[in-house]
Length: 72
Image 1 (cartoon, rainbow, N blue to C red):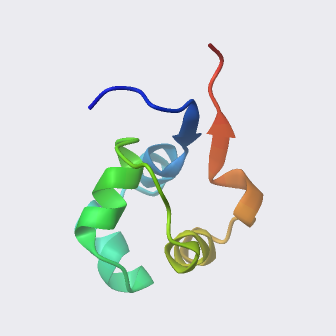
Image 2 (image 1 turned 30 degrees about the horizontal axis):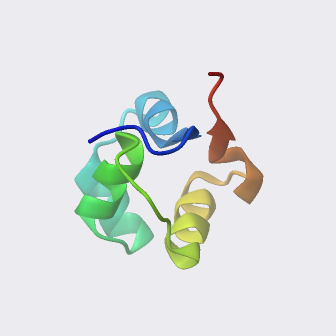
Image 3 (image 1 turned 90 degrees about the vertical axis):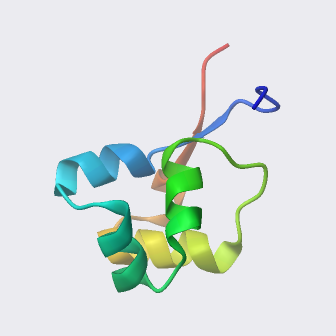
């Protein structure tokens, strides 16, 4: 996938810190494993607001912490 944007997701960092896997997080948060995987690997063009909220709720992080703009 070519880089279309400079928005990056911190989900993989949060997963690494928690020691959990994509399937466990997806099931507990109530979202698909594919959505977790795409976000964790920064392979997304859009993010559903509910998915964003469920991930942040699961990790008990503020909504504004999940994404950031990468330096060019």
